[in-house]
Amino acid sequence: MPNTFEVGIVGAGVAGSSCAQVLGRAGVKVALFDHSHPREKPCGGLIEDRVVDEFNIPEELLENEIRWFLAERFKFRVKLFLKPSLFLISRKDFDYYLLQKALKNKSVAFFDEKVSQVTKGENGWILKTNKDRCVKVKVLIGADGCPSLIRKYVFRPILPQFLAATVGYNFPCSSKYIEKVFAKNTVEAYYSHEYVQKGGFIWIFPKRTSINVGIGSMETGKKLKQSLDKFILSHPAGKRLKLLKGHFFTHLVPVIWMKDFFDFPCSGMNWALIGDAAGHVNPISGAGIYYAMKGGMLCGLAFLDGDLHLFERYWRKEYGDELYYGTKTFLTFYSNLGFFLWLQYIFENFLCQLKLLLSSN
Ligand SMILES: Cc1cc2nc3c(=O)[nH]c(=O)nc-3n(C[C@H](O)[C@H](O)[C@H](O)COP(=O)(O)OP(=O)(O)OC[C@H]3O[C@@H](n4cnc5c(N)ncnc54)[C@H](O)[C@@H]3O)c2cc1C
Figure 1 (cartoon, rainbow, N blue to C red):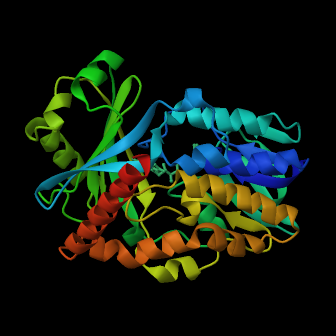
Figure 2: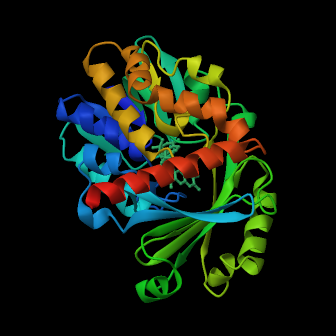
């Protein structure tokens, strides 16, 4: 006989663990599945201050405070001041911390297993894992990232035109090297058409004892790897990494550039999709950690409020505008017209700096 739980969450990344935490705190019997921990999820690991504030992230997880954004676009370089600061984290430590926090609640059972099959039953779902476990759940939550297996069962997969490839390297190196070679408290982004043709950019994120470098765009992974390697060999910024040995990674990320996508539901009577599985990623920056955590939390609250459909209302109210704005501006931002959006962004940043300067005097 299968074990029975009220809620099954597939995926204990930032979305799944945040959701499990909310449900666990309320004593809901949750089965949480993930075969991958501890692991460094392919990710830049750049988070906004609202992640730190709203989720009480401990200081020791913050590897670098980011106050400057150095960007190269349309052949010129700007260094923009960021207020409030951003932070860099290691996904291995960050996700493990969130998972442990969720597991502090006794009603959350963790299965270090991969869900391989889902069947719709009369009053719920039956999940089978790669270790031949069979678990029955009343409600199924897909938090299994991109591409999502659960999404295919409960709704339909994200179409390939909304998936961007990413490739990159994590270069472990000493903090001394990072201090010597990289500007303090700074992340870098390169939008040059020489390396990225179809909407995307190359990033360099110096952390505590590693440097995360990657490229993401609507091109194929193979093409992106060639472009990134070329960048490292030939661009003055890339050359700083040439002699380091890195761990290669590749992964998909949803990039939703059509507004209609978000009009589709990401919850039903007894299912919901959160995080990357729901496509909740900022299409312009590729940032999804905040939306995954916030979405996970809101989905948990919708369940506790007695109606999973409420999740639709909750996420749209909290961060819907940001995602809809991204879908509307994605194509313009990455076209030549994006020059004007870019100028506007630089101008606003300049005004912000001026205001800060005046208020400090
Ligand atoms: C290269 C790259 C760089 C990025 N950089 C940033 C950044 O700097 N800042 C930012 O905010 N966002 C960034 N993102 C986006 C961010 O990583 C995602 O939006 C975020 O991780 C989504 O969280 P999630 O919990 O939905 O999915 P994930 O973090 O992908 O977690 C999904 C989990 O589900 C598990 N899983 C999958 N299938 C199964 C299964 N069948 N059974 C059990 N478990 C399963 C996986 O093992 C994984 O642990 C980046 C993405 C990529 C690809």
